[in-house]
Length: 381
Image (cartoon, rainbow, N blue to C red; front, top):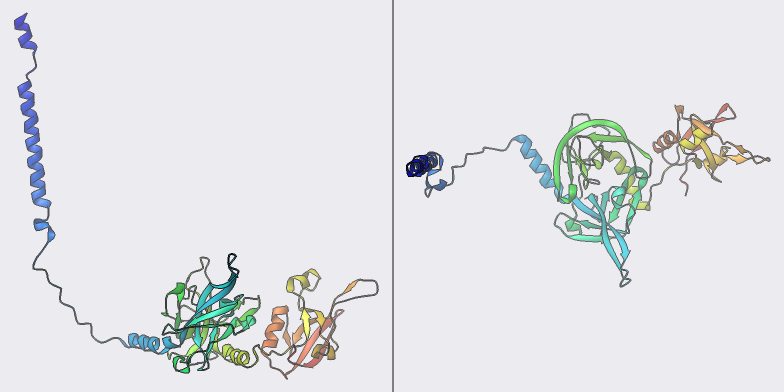
């Protein structure tokens, strides 16, 4: 019926009005929020001026000392690049490519640069960049792998060569201020401060020998710092940064430096002879693992005695075969000048403290009996 249809129809004008009212309230609320929270003028201020600078005052004595040391020593520091020769398979020409980098320092005005042996190890040549960024290439490299020391020779004008000031390491004290200068990660001439953390440490050289008497420092040493100088508060060289103790390979608070007293003994020999002249007995000793497998629990087992050597003249014996072909062990060195020799490294360390011409008393064990002989150390090829 027509009347019933009119009563059941929805009231659409009322719904539309409510919707419009909701939209108006929403827009009004949004406008009010924007008005209260939106920055007026878009944050711009046409009257903005630089702020006044506060007066700093004089640099502290410590800062002045740091700056003076850096400015004085940095001209003596060099960047060292190890070069390797590779052939071009297309042209058959040889080309040199960087193999690794490190730091070095100027030793004298003749062009001798000191760095770590492991910085230039297995390279065919080296490239040295001085503080003024002049670059020189050299093939003349002399090294002592036992102490991780190498000397390079560049043909640079003496006017560009400022030798580093040498100090001493035998009188260092734990707690002294130190500065490490080098090129960590290739960053040019970086200086980091620290202290002498410990003395008399031992680290392993590139050829497996132990370097004793090493300086431990808290000055940051990172890859690229190797071969760089470790300085005291007077700007003097007290060591050469050579290693870090870190599982990640980056600085973790423990760095090591070869003491300058050792460097000052070895470098002149490398410059004079191209090698280090060390006093020797004239024996070849077994590696400790082999000696232990052969039943020698303590001491340095002699494998071979060089002819016409101090050891041969004293009657020392190496390993040999008897008439039945059985191996007869050689003598075992158990003492040098009364100091106990527990292994081959102890023997090397005992001899490193002597010089050519020194007389030493060597105690050996032969067939469970000990006997003592006196030898005069010589330099042997």
